[in-house]
Length: 166
Image (tube, rainbow, N blue to C red; front, top):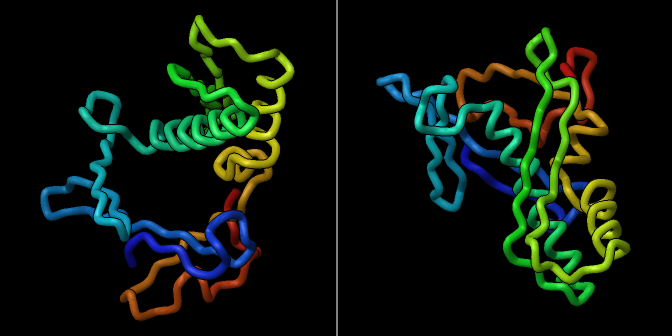
């Protein structure tokens, strides 16, 4: 099961399923793979020279926000370069995030109105950024153990279950 997208048009259609494969090698290293052949190592702690899963969640949120925020501004006539986004997560005592903040650090020479910046921020947060909206609106997570890749996959599974973890 490599990364794949099935159904829909890939741009918000309800029937789209996406997946990646995370593998643990014989030497206990962990990596993620997608259908495009990209391999990304995943670290297991804070001292590793790779991103760990918590950081990858923050990266996904920041990357999604960066793409959407800059695209909105570009469509409004303001191509933006030099933007930095910092994503900060406040960990709760039960090993989850209890709050996340996406901070848009505009370049000093940016010449965009406050109104256009707010439109881009609002559209990114409320409409466009799939990662942000998934976190905010919650998404059931089902942990399913398969003995082989021939068993039914997520695409065939019901969209909600009683055992889903949020």
